[in-house]
Image (cartoon, rainbow, N blue to C red; front, side, top):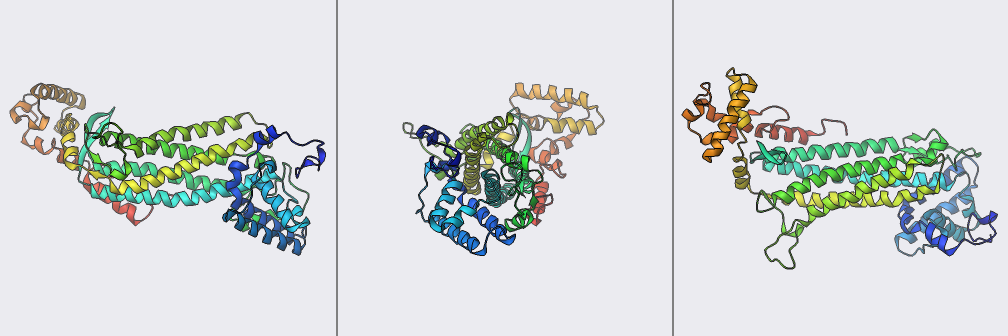
Length: 462
């Protein structure tokens, strides 16, 4: 072949060195080698089963690929950019090792369905690693919620103190976000778990292949139904990146709260020193670098999702070389999500909560004002009238520099004769959170009940 390529029979000149640098992908898709070898072994065995390959060729191919995988694992494999990608590098080395049998491996398939299979196997493997990691983090959030089930803190809307909640309830809110992200990953795994091999370049193959056997061999639930869609489809990668972006958005929101809560102005939490850094000039600083980096890395994962969406939006069927550009955003999202989940799983169990500061903050900002309004409604006052009454009481307490619970009973009765001495059981912090004693509420009893349900096992689809 004058071009020196495995596909070079039609070409009369070698590829430009600049084009080789421009078009190679092995520098980043080499990480697919395990999946590529796994898929090739299954393909070869299937070709042997249907009589396309001789048994001796199948044995040589399987043994050769197994040896190549061992070489790659040991760092003995030489990746050659001029061979373009992971697939051609492995196939060329296989042919060097076993001769003509290596050239027969590609019978009945194309790099188009080969790479589609490799990426699906890779993303599936990644999801199988991420799900237990998310379970671990969810478990740590449960432990922290249980530890702080009675800790009172302000709940915020518009970053203004709204109503008192418990710290445990807040941690369960984080966990709910994580569980939804976990569910999305698991759901995406099920949807993508269809075998692409057999679509070949775009129209299928003339060989009597057994796609269902290969699917079972590789752990797929079935086979893709349309060859055109199969080789051009990357929506499973986009879906993964969308879930990764959403999960990072959730982690970024947690990070923003931890960054705020760890400042002296809040003082709600203290992060372990090993997850923070200091300042090169200000010796008193303890910077929450881990949450800040997670917050920052979210931007790149959101950007990766956008890159894949734009990559796909103008492509006609079927395969186009544009799709080589799907891997770097996908791989970066995988790496970033995994690392962020790992660091949070390590950090969360060691977050220390300052219960006194949390309670002190909850006592500010008239966080039990709504409780006073509800109290008046229960006494028969229409809610809008109760809202007005409590607003007047808050204005008075603001001018007096005290909280509603610190006002004298006679003063409160000046705003409404419906107020009696039982009001103080309602407008205290404990009274406020304990009153919200229903599923989903912030009452400590409900926090513990939610934790107990979670520890018994999933009460919702995985």
